[in-house]
Length: 291
Ligand code: FVH
Image 1 (cartoon, rainbow, N blue to C red):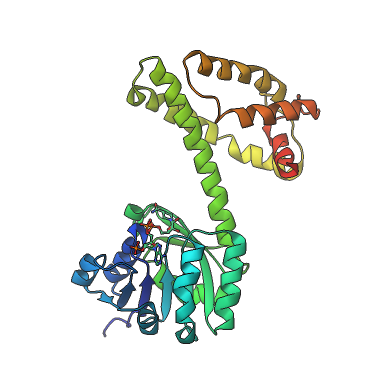
Image 2 (image 1 turned 135 degrees about the vertical axis):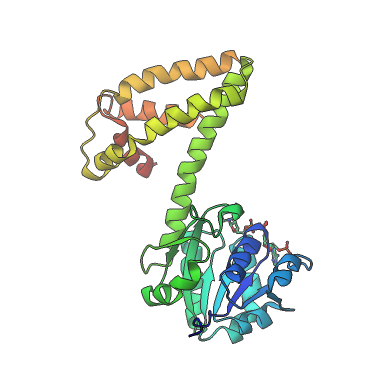
């Protein structure tokens, strides 16, 4: 018995990520049609079996599932506008980075043209696509997600976050906020260490072990945030606010800018002034929400 035919899929946008997505679809055996504004980016894909379309509308007409991975929301709207007449009956899967409101507006637009819409947040870099560590967050109609799930699995694990089209973007951006906080802290630490002549490669195993240990604190922090019980676990906000000044002073002493860390100091000081000196860090979340 022959294997069931794979759904035809279209990919609009062949930047670093679009090429990785299209490559994963081809590798999974999907008839894959690709389009990109600038020519010359589809060569490896067509050599592997993809079809390059001359216009975005031709590409969309060839696919049952239409994956969009462009620079930003503005570009996505520009590329999709002329495609509206051929959208009906298809599922638009927008993996372009954008805000929850942009995702909701695009969903409304796609639905008004007879298409289903799923919005996605890619929690991976291009080299991870199709590999075990890749995770893609989706939101939009559950039926559309279920129908597309097998195809979308070519990219990596597919996690549905609910019917609100903005949910995937919200989670994606929140996760990126956590990531940039970590990278910002690490870059500051390395700048301090390098100023003392210590190579980043020598310091990084210490940083990795320390950050890994601190990650273990997150579930308890989350419980405090949700319950409103901010009891400190031995590391009260007041103590942390007092010690934080040393971090800034030591940075200045070695000529490292404190601009990445100043907002954290302000938050700790605000928390102490608001009476949270004896609490744990979970008390700070509400202060951020009021800002
Ligand atoms: N690459 C990554 O690590 C991250 C991982 C998480 C998700 N992001 C988001 O994915 C979107 C695409 O990212 P990308 O890495 O593919 O980005 P580029 O390589 O810069 O490709 C951009 C594509 O957009 C096309 N494009 C730009 N401007 C226009 C326009 N005015 N009209 C039509 N297309 C346009 C560009 O085409 P071209 O320059 O080759 O003609 C590329 O196809 C993005 O939202 C990330 O945040 C990636």
